[in-house]
Figure 1 (cartoon, one colour):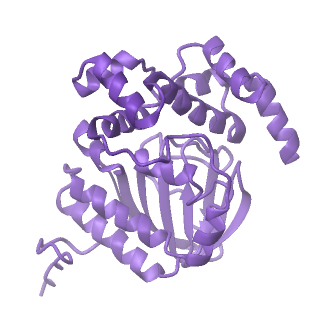
Figure 2 (figure 1 turned 90 degrees about the vertical axis):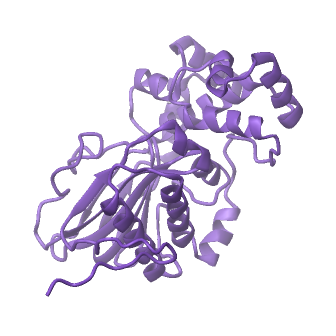
Length: 326
C-alpha cells in the first residue's frame, strides 16, 4: 500500500515526501520575487556513500566543480550536513573540518570547495539564495566569510525547514513565489539560531554596504533593493529610475531626503563592496571582477579603489595577501 503524502505544516497543502535519493532543482527567477528581500535560487539534498565520487552529477556548470579547481558562486548557500563528516575550504577561512549537525555557509564571490570524508561519506541538504537582506546580514556581521562553518542551536529544526522547502519545490517546480522566499527566511533564521555565535558575530567589523539606517519611504526601499540585487550589472541612476517607473528627479529628491546621499553614491558603494570582496578573497582576474561588480571600465574601478583604499585593485590585493600571509 502506497503511503499517503504528508501535509505541509501550517499550509494545508499536500506535498510529496522528500525523496531519499539525490534531488536538486534550480528555480526560475523573475522580478516579482525580488521584493521579499531574500529570494531562493535552488534547493536540494544528497547522500554520498563512503568512497563515492563527489560532487554528485547533474548540476549546471555554474554550480558543478572539481576539488582541484573549486568554484566561486554569485550567491549565498546554506548547507546542513546531517550525517558523516568532511572538509570545507575557502579563500577567506582556509580548511575547516565539518561534522554532522553543522552548517556550511557559502558566500558570493568567495572561492571555496568541500567534500565528504571518503571513509564516511555524508548526507547534505541545502538552499542557495540571494537578495538585499542577505547582503545586509553579511555587511552587519550577522555571519562572516571568516567563520563559514558552525553548529546551529537546533539542527533538527533547520533540517525540517529544509525538508519543507524541498517538498514545496517538488510539488510546484515551476513556481518561485514570495511564500518560497519566506520559507527561505525561516531556513536562514534556523541556521543562525545560536546565541553564542550571534554574540561573537555582532562584534565583527562592518563592511561598507547598503545603509543600515531604516528607510520608511517605500520608493527608496525599492531603489536600494534594486541597486543591491542588480549590482552585478552596469547601472546608472537613470536605469534605477526607469526600473521603478518614476521620474529621475523625483527619485533623487526622495532618496537624498531619506538617506542623506545620492543614488550614484549608493551605486558606487554597491560596486565597491562587491569588487573589494572579490579582489580580497578570490584569485579572479581583475577583468572578471570588473564585470561581476558592475563597473563600466577598469579606470573607473581603479579610481574608486584609490579613493577608498589609497591603492589600485592590484595593489590592494597584494597588500591583503601579505597581511594574510598567503
